[in-house]
Structure formats: C-alpha cells, structure tokens
Length: 288
Image (cartoon, rainbow, N blue to C red; front, side):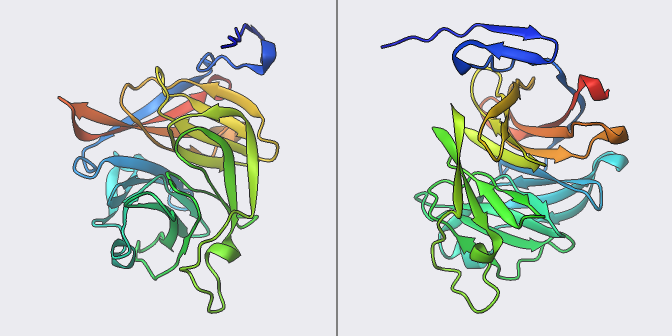
C-alpha cells in the first residue's frame, strides 16, 4: 500500500497542499452565528434544510415531514406537512425524503425507495406544500440530496458513499410538459467529476458556480466546496456540532458580502434515540 503524506501551509487566503491534498476542516473562517433546536423532527429523523428567499424562512425536511420556520420570529412554525411523502410515491415504495431545495416558488424533494433504486425527485409549490403529481425517476440508487440551478433549469445530486461524481439532470427531462411518461428512468444529462472522493454525503446546495456538500465524515463532519463546472475542490470546513450531519442550505450574504451564510443540520440523540435536530448558521469571518 502506498501512503501519501499531505503537508498543508496556510499563507493568507492561499492554501498550498502537497500532492493536491486538502487539510479537511482546517479552515476556521467559518463559524456558527445562529443555532436553533427543532423538536418537531423527533419521530421523523431530520434530513435536510433549504432557504426560502422570498419569505426569508428555513424549510426543514425529515424522513416524512416538512415544516417552515421563521428565524425573525424565534423560529415560529408557519407551515407543516406530515406525512409528507406523497401517497402516489408511497404506493411505489418511496418513503425517505432527503435534503431539499427551492427554485421559482417550488420545493424540490429527493425521495429514496425501499431497496435504494430509481431515486425520485418530486416538486410541489412552496406556498401550499401540496403535491400536484410532478415527479421524475432517476437511475441513481441513493438520492440523498438535490440542489437546483434555477437559471439553468438543472438539478444536481449524487450517491451517498464513495462520491467522486455529481449527476446533473435537465428539468425538461425530469418533468416533461407534453404528456411524457414520468415512470421512465432518467439518466443524467451530464456528470461532473470531482477531484476528491467524499463519503456519507448528506446535503448539497449551489451558490453561483460553487457546490456546497455536507457530509457525515468523521471526526468533524466537514462541508466541502467544489467548483461545479470543473469539479475542483475549492475549500472545506469542519462543523462544530457532534450529531449526524443532516442537510445544508445557503443564505444570501448579509450586507452584500461575497460569501453566503450556510445552514447545516445535525440530529440530536439521547441514549441513542433521536430527540430532534440542531441547525446552525455559519458565516465566514470576513463577512462578520
């Protein structure tokens, strides 16, 4: 077995790493500025989060629950849907919602199936959370997260483990408008190859050309930032909460800063039993 030793030196904003290795979690610029514990997901296991730009609210997903919380009013719950897996999909064996995303007033849900095959992406209006029958089936086995590029009308996702590629789907293929068969499995329109393999991917979101990926890798459940066009690793930072990583969202930067804020969720356990989830809002030091 060949062992590669990585040596990293931080010089200002430049991180120089021998042999293209990265010091995971070495970036201390990202620190939590807000945290909130949600007991609403106790029985449903927290899975994800997205940010509703129009309402400036957080939308939390659990395995079979969705609810919207307003951080400006002590995270008051403004919408709730439980059970949340549409019956049409439940009857097809789908049961597990992952890390959600928003685009154009729609909520996009990745939903996994018993046996983990033909991962599904469904969508519903953010304003009502009422499923209208729109979904697409993919050739992915696991589908733990979805991130939507609203301008390009593309949806991004990946498998759960040994992730060195990201699949890109066209909306027109997932949601055909002219009588298409939404039971036909959709192959990725293209695949982005990453220059680093990551494990236990629990969430993802886009900010411009940067793809943020939340993981459950030990010991500090890092978040990775990749260039979504080239697949190059740009940055990473470790999270501070000890529970299982559960989803990620980006929030527009305060005061016109260059970097978005990042919400990362973690399941909270008591004696091995999930009792809720804590979600933390991270901010880069330059924008504090």
